[in-house]
Length: 79
Image (cartoon, rainbow, N blue to C red; front, top):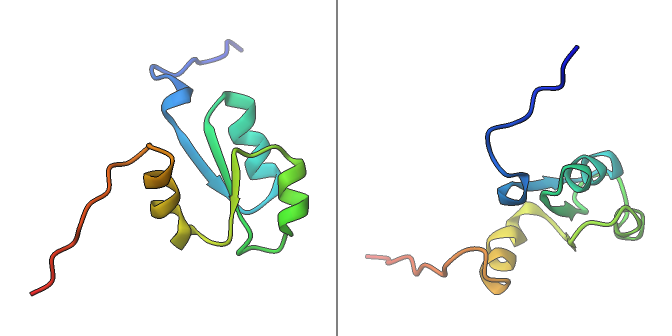
C-alpha cells in the first residue's frame, strides 16, 4: 500500500491533546503540539513526551496562542 501524503504542511497544524499518545502523534508529523492536563495524565508525564507547552486546560489555549504570536488578540465588545 502506498502512503498517502497530505496536500498541506503539518507545520501549519495545531495538535492539542491530553495523553502522551496525542503528543507523540503531533510531534511525529511536525505539528505545533500542546498538551493539556485536564485529562488523566500529569503535567510531568506529558512534558516528557515533548510538547511545545503544557497547559492546564483548553481554556488556556487562546491566551497561549496570543502570547506566542500564533493568533492576534481580539477584544470582544459587550453592550
